[in-house]
Image 1: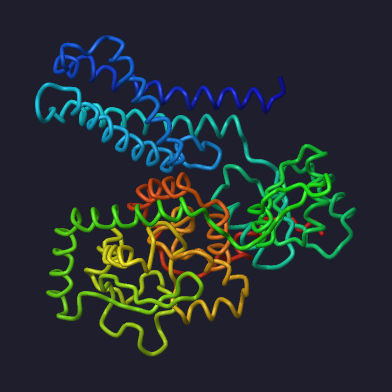
Image 2 (image 1 turned 90 degrees about the horizontal axis):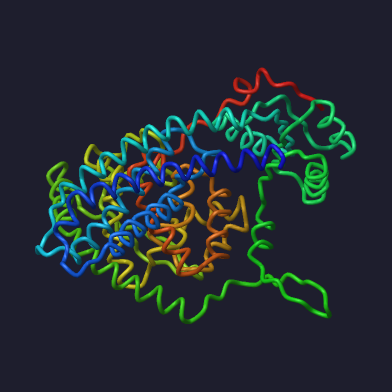
Length: 462
């Protein structure tokens, strides 16, 4: 058994520990209180099934929300992920309890106390797991190999956020023979490389070299990679062939998706109507302007529709050429707007757009017509995201940020387009709950990373 396998086992034990701890807390709550409220015919095996259900749900939700991503998460990320997972798990377990107890409405307080205890334990576990993981997985001696300055910045941003995983020892620019790059990798006793913006031939050669040499290769994909990754593998004349074509979801999936849009949209509209009413009153009282903000957006096959949102900016905020992007600390945002944007309440009127059929719940976010035309001049492939209907939430929203670059958003949207399924949509909906209270997911654009300042201690190899 090599070192990596031993480390994998230890990390698995670490992950299993928090699941058993949370399940143990729920089991105590269940046995000491709720078993006394159950129907008489509910047997001991039934109790085991309920506890097993909690374990399964908690494990699934923790996986959905990134609670097991010890390598790529910080303490706050892990604690938040397990906190959301616990809330979702206890919500469903309370419904199950409601079906099993004799009284009409079961007492919620024992579960709330159990939930709080689980959150505290999860927070302590996150603190310890982060530190244990850092000891098990120390920073790797890393080289950034790049082709252009934008790709270089991407590599530096990753290294900055995950400084506990990467120790940048230098950079290598392309334009020299692959043999010289490989020599530079070997001379620096490199443990990992970041391949950013490289052409396919060079990237493939370096990836094969890294695999043969036992070096971890972190590869930033390009649009072509994603299109190939979403292709269908077929065999022709006994040879493997990738079939790349425009997305064509099944009729069953499209029917299910539309039915879900109508059912979920109408239900959410009814349940959230009090919040929407309060928001409308607050906007009107603040400056007397219109409650709703409408704008032309583009969706599937370049169809243009009118999107509806609660107005979060000053009246006529788009005048004088403004409005293409929202800046961080944008002075056009009103005090009421800051609150409703932070809680995503400004997006709620789009439920009407979903019910009408102009949008769907899960899909690439609709962009302004002018914005798409601008992005297409810079990146013609941006039009590929218009293969599907625009959505309220999507892959780029749950895994990116509001200020993620258009190219990176396009990559994430293409990942979704190639992986469309009921399970994928469900996963994105559940993951959206996680980001509702994450401030950075609504950050506006700001100044880019200062490359010279951040990389001043780096050694340029070539």
